[in-house]
Length: 382
Image (cartoon, rainbow, N blue to C red; front, side, top):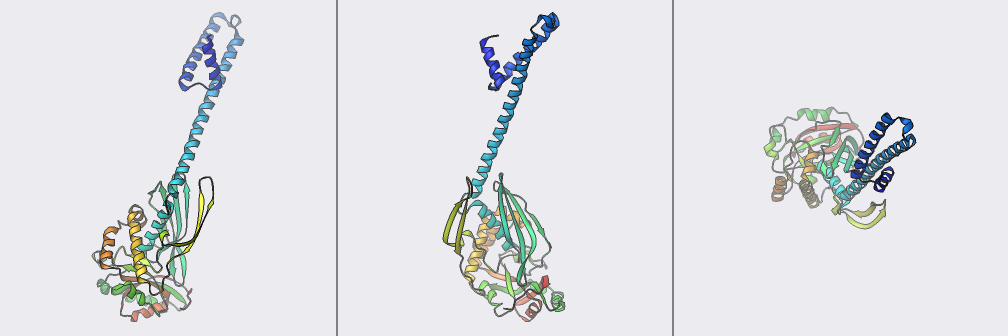
């Protein structure tokens, strides 16, 4: 047995050979085993050094097991390294930017819900970042009367920025419709007013009010001054509602809620602190204020915020179309129409005491009404 072979055999036992050398020496050892077996048969065990054979067999077995352990630990080590790198890359990917990607994605989701779902918004949301994945969850809530209540759940996953189809669970899938003027006058809403007449005192309700014409935001807000109800969502003419009208109202109203949908850039920061939360993570705390909004005014701020919100979700239309779930939003043409014609409201979601809503029947600007949710009293008079 040459010194070179002995050296290779030693390294094999220690598991330090390269894969090529390991395969080569295993072939040699197999030949030796066959040779020893042959000698045993030909000469008999008493004429051959059985102790030497046993020793060599032990070396072979030991070497094989060491090689196997070495390979296994190498694979495990590579997997751990890949896991660490991918986790680091995931955190870096979603935390990059100002605001970060995770903040932007969250903003796009919440904004899409707010402008496409009348009187529905995400509150109490959370974001978790895992291996290559970001998971966003939130409660879907409606304002009915004087309080918000949970109306469903929303969950959406992202795989390195690629959105999945969201998991949405609502208490009720059907919602009342708006009717675009002048088609609204064709709808007979006697049954809807009868609901309000027969609902007992001590209840609050949600109503979708279709207007007799298009109103600029400033005028639409003034309609509810000195009234004991809240206007909580405004349906806006985006140039396609009239085309969608087939006697049942627009199929996909777009509008804005009573309070603007503020975005990270709208916050006027007064203080900022950053604390380290881990090896590659930090938590930033910011405090500041958003623009002041008058209850029945600030139309320009509201209109500008609405357009900024539409432009945001148009920029991330792959996400917003997933969130919307029904059909492409075609935001580019809608935004262009609003920029050329201004913001005009044709429908409003109103909530408050049921009998106060009934009084709206006397208003000339109310063309039709459809009733949504009804709850027990939770109202404080204005």
